[in-house]
Length: 127
Image (tube, rainbow, N blue to C red; front, side):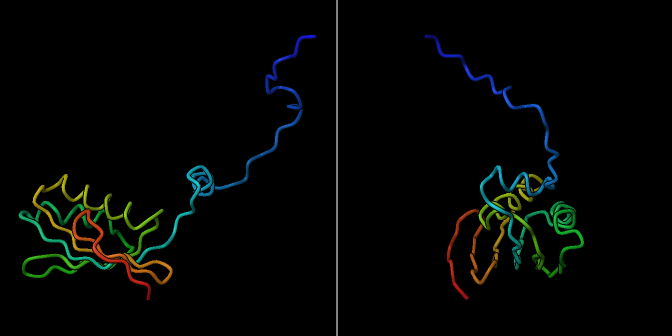
């Protein structure tokens, strides 16, 4: 007796509407939900005029950018999977504008603060 291959078409007599949002679908596919992170960062660069528009675009209305004599102080909120991913994304975008850019950042979520210097995690602290 031969077995029939399952084609996946059996029982497809009905379709169910997917009512999840795009964010929920992405979170399920990635296996993690997005979290809210608070950012406190210092950005310095060899070319601040090139970096400032990138910072303004990234932060938008979710935070503030304060200009000092030699750097930008940034306080904002972001949503993402992890502090490492958010930090990497931010620094990569800044370095597209100016290669000689440094990012000292603290990302806080759910009572845990992660400190980065450029791409490197330097300290993790439970609050």
